[in-house]
Structure formats: structure tokens, C-alpha cells
Image: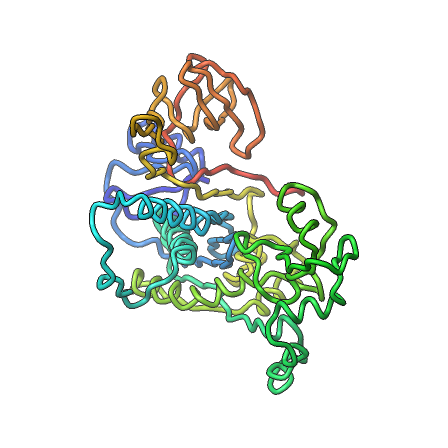
Length: 413
């Protein structure tokens, strides 16, 4: 299947490979994108498509499923992996700025009267995820004449996810009510003993899932350790620890609760000529079970469109969002004489940069790392290593890198 754009860039219904080859050979179309393969006509086609294209979106905090169907045919399917490093990068920036203030190298005094948040503001980590959802839909609408967008966005009740009985008065007067804080409750629950060596001296409370990785202060994520075991664990000593009381992380639920309204409002404003509606997870679950389809994000999105029986060619795109540019100009450590080393490497080495799609010995790969000598570590689009020292003369550039890496995966029969 080849996606087709009109002469003015508006999307048309896709055509077969044979039809696209005929148009390209007769110079009636040009290639505008390799994956997904898209051509643009060199002339203008009048009139509409006359077909309804329904786009389904399975929203998520880590992976997005998207599918576009028309009748009994699947036109487009993809799974988008969202970036999860925003919080870590912001924390690193905070440390750098704090160190800069301590060295009194800031060029002006900090101002605190310009911290007003605009209407609809979201935390940066959630804002990146909300934009990923909107951009995924925009990418599909750019190559297909979508008429309706259906989004599965629902609100999670975290209190019920903890326990079905922790609601109302039971939730307000739970077992932690008799303790001064969560730390005291976790120690009392563990019998004031280290859960690794059994010691009762110098007790501390440890986060099983670190806060930097989305762990919370809930009792199920806390365990009592002595000072020796606690420090040893942070220095690399492995401890056999598992979340307590059936604990599960709730960061994904919190993210979805925060961005569900923003995604719907932004899509409604972006596409006033399209019908934007939302659906719920239990409807998708029942539809997938009724049709006997396997669990996958793009298959859930197919069920969301209402055409769960639509026939697919067995392939879908895997899109991995990645960081575009490192804005840190200098290294953190200052050398003798006040000199600071540059943090950014040259953009191009022998005409290539990290993330470029290249052809190496007949295989389509991407540049994973590079050396100034002209040797490159190239890997397949799915991340499989190909050659750790490919010479630049063996590479043929297909396209330069972008903020997303796309590869096509095939469903197992």
C-alpha cells in the first residue's frame, strides 16, 4: 500500500504499489517519504474521496496504538513508544543550575514574578506525552483523508486500584491512621526489622522502585532496611526485594488522568472539520474478546475504530520517539585556568550523524554511534546490531535523522 498526496499536499486514498510505480515511471508523481512510502501527484485531482476513514487511538503513558480503517480494510497501523526521560533530564538541569548559582556565575539575579503558568499548562513530562499523542494523529491525518477520530481515554480511580474496600470511610480511616507518618507505618508493618538481614538497629525506609523511576511514597513501595543493607544496595549490592501488599506503580494512571482532557481539547481545536469522539476501555476489551484478537496496542486501536474485522496486510509501523538535540553547551567540570570543554560533538562526521538511516551491505540500518575516524556502529531499525565498525565509505545515506525512528514490523501468523 502506497499513500498518495494531491498536488496541493492534501491526502488522498492510498493506491497499490503497481499504480504508484506506473505514476513514478511516467513522471506523474514524486516520492516525498520512504517510510511510510508516500508519493505526491504532480497534478491536482478535483473532487473528494467519497470514503469514510476512521482513525482509532489507544492512548497510553508509554505506548500509543493507532489504526486507520475504511470499510473492511486496514489503511494504517502503528505503535508509538513515548519518551520516558523527560523527568530525569529536568532533574539534571535543576542540579546544573543549582551548582551555577552556588558558584555565583549567574549573570543576573533570579526573578520570581515571571512564573505565571498559562491556562492549560501541563508538567513537562506529561506535556511531552500529550504532544506525542497529538503528533501521532497529525502524522496519520497528513497521509490519509480521515473523517472521524475516536480516542480511548478514560479516568482511573487510583484509590480503587489500591483496594476495592478502600473507599469512603474505609479509605479515610485505613490502618495507617494510627501512625504519625508513612515511614512509621512501614517500619511497624515490617516488625521493626531489616527485611534483608533481620537486624533491628539503625533502621531506614527504602523505596523499592526509586522515585526517579516513577516510584511513589505509598506503603507498598516502602521496605525497612538497616543502614548497612541500605547503603550496600545503593552501592551495587543486589537485594531480593519485591513490592509489598501487591503494590503496583500508579504513575501511568496519574499521567493519563492529567492529560486526557488536554488531548481531547487540542484535537477538537485542531480538526474542527472532523468528528472527534472518545470511547472507553471496557468497550475495546469486550470487542477484542468477541472477535478473538490478540492483545496489542495497534489491535486495540483497530477495535476502537469499530472495524475490528478489517483485513490487514500483516504489518505495522513501530515509531520510537527520541531526543532531537542536547542543549548543554559545556561539560560540567571546569578545567584548570577556568577553561570549559564543549559538550556537543560535531553535527556531522564524514557527512553522517547519529540516527541517520543508511544502507549497509544491502540492509537498511541506522547510525547508533560514530567515531571521528569515520567508523560507525550501525544497527537494524529494530535495534539489532549489524556492525560495530562499519567504515563511512561502506554507507549510503537514505535520509537524515529526525525526532522519531520508524521501522516496519510484521505480525506473527
